[in-house]
Image (cartoon, rainbow, N blue to C red; front, side, top):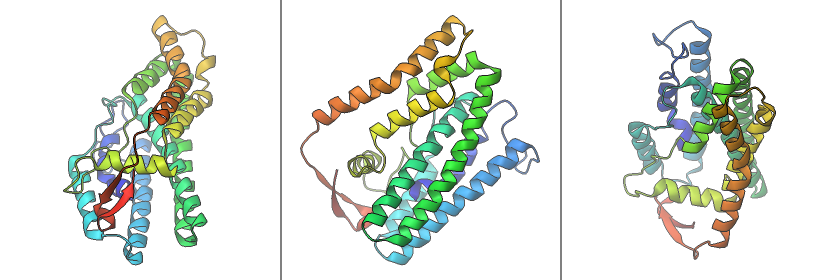
Length: 263
């Protein structure tokens, strides 16, 4: 929910992209600008709904949550897309699939533990994210169709830098390692894991037919080989990390009144 609430940052990021994609006036009638504003409005509904749900449950410290949102919007984000629309839409394709997966997994957890309201909320949001994913994937699919060499290189460049999660600068006023600890809990619970990251990468490689591209330049072929080999490499690294997992650690989270949670 905190990630969804930092929407001004994400709309700003899309409006930094070159190539006629950005909204030059703030109310531009171009198709790109209309899409970005409509996408932002829909994502805003997600944040609002989850915020209201958490407020009404009384289960969380809303003051600390609102502080985290304030800090996150103030900190911004750097997805390392470098104003490049190719990289920008590869990034959003990846992120929308990640949010589809994480909301869906949260819905299943909620249902398993008897909170059918939360399960329905997260299931509905996951369906929206799936539609967003489809839109961005189709944009990149068109880029592969009309400009396969540069798109393959942009894909490889984005993956070399690794896809940073939108809330990687999260801070609650106390914990400098908040995002890392939040990510560790999400990994342990199976909400969003390193395996999911590898799955998304392999899915996009298949979806865009990267392995079947022909007529590429030398640099394009190297990019093609790189992205097609990444999924198995990520899986091997994840297996090694799991094998070397450290001892059980519990840390307090200010969002739930400093209750300690296992990482």
